[in-house]
Image (cartoon, rainbow over all chains, first blue to last red):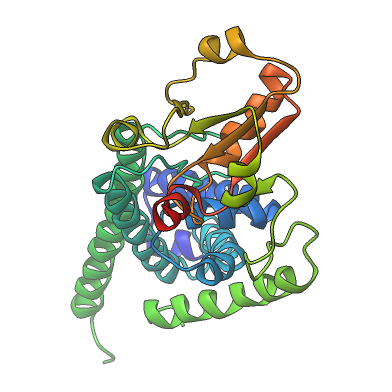
Length: 157
Length: 138
């Protein structure tokens, strides 16, 4: 497996499984009820209804695929980047809703874990964002180490 | 593709589009592409105003309610769920009309559903277009 070759730490593996599993869970809950999720997206009042409908069909599957890629270590570098961009967009939407004083239900996990407590929502998003940034940093560190090893390897005699 | 993170990302983005497209055509709970039609539990402002014995419920935030609200409306949202004032004056044929910010909000649907469940009220409707519809027509 790719992990064994490049030497992922146990902690990195744990964080990957946790974050990957979380996105799969969130994606599946929303994919089960796109009508409900479209309402949740529309609630943020950032997109027209048609945009909310498109998002309700697409975003859950993007979360599931990216989460699975992270969990199984296949295309995980791409998955980290997608999930980071998604989280940045989610945090911006949340921030915009908070600024306008909207009474929203996050919609992040469908009906499960639904809360309109902004402090809790920001805290949860910050934890996920932090984990993803840590994974990106770990990947970058490993890549540098790999390059150093490759440079120090003796060439063909 | 191991060393090209953005190519990997593109592949994931494209792959996710396949089940999303399938869901758009075949999912049993797919949302309607247009919100022009009136849902079963929605009323237009004209209908609501023509109905007698209506209690207006404001499902927006407390701050929005404090700024302005439909005259006589009671503030009720899931952050401050207090049924007592409603339960006191509740009659079985009482009509409730719940509103939130606009067409694009969902709080009124959530409050209406909870009201039906907890108060046993039958005539609970959501104002189509919400507060924005009221402000426009006023």
